[in-house]
Length: 279
DNA sequence: GAGTTTGAAACT
DNA sequence: CAGTTTCAAACTC
Image (cartoon, rainbow, N blue to C red; front, side, top):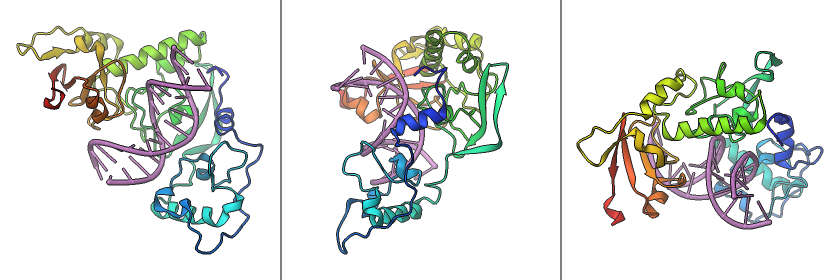
C-alpha cells in the first residue's frame, strides 16, 4: 500500500488482521481452580497484543498459545487487572482526538486529523514520516508531548508536505534523505519543540574541516560512516555514543560485541575511542 | 518469505 | 530516571 492510499483506519484493520468485529469484553468462562496459567504471572501483564490493549478478545488472529480469547476469560480478566494495577492508562486510547474531526489542509493537499498523541512519540530515525511513528499512523502532527528527534511531522515541514506532493518514489527518497540527515548530521536535532535547522546551516556543519591536533578527533564531515546507537541520552546527540558500522545496532552492548569502534561526540567533533575490551 | 529495522512497552 | 530487553509491526531484499 502506498502512502497516498494509506489511512489510519485501514492500517488499523490491516495490521491487526482483524476480523470484522472483535468481541468486546463480556463473556465469562471460568478456569479450573488452582490452574496455573502464563497470563497470571506478572510478566504477562503486557499490552504488546493490540487486541488486549484495545480491550478486545483475540479472535481469528494469528497468535500462538493465545489466552486472550473468550475461552480464558477469567485468566484474561486477571491479566487486565494486573495490567491496570501497574499502569492505569494501559487501556486508554493513545490518541486524544479532537471533537472537530478531520481538517482539510488545502495547502498541502491532505486530510489531517485533529488530535494529539497522549504520550507523544519518541521517534529517532524515521523523522516521524513513516508508519513506525504512532503520530504518523494516527495521521496527526507531532505535538509538544512528543520527544522525537529530527521530527519532520510538524506544521510547515517541507518533508511532510513533500509526502503529499509528487510521486511516491520521490517522496520516499526525500524521506530517506531526511532520515539520513537525522542519522549523520542532525546534531541537536529538533524534536517538535525546537525550530527545524535550515538545510543551509546543516550543510555548513557537515562540511566543517578537521583541524583537531588529536588524531583521534574528527570533524562531523567524517561522520558519513557513523551510526548513532539506538539509545542515547535525552540531552540530544551532543555527548551521545556513536558507533561505526553499516547498520544501527540496538544497543551499545550489542554493538561492542561486534567489535565496532565507538566514538564520542562533542559539539562538532567526534573523539574516536577503542574500548580496551575490543582488543 | 526471510531477515532487518524501528519504536513502543516492559523490565531492571 | 536511565539503560536495557522484549515484542510486534514496518520495511527491505
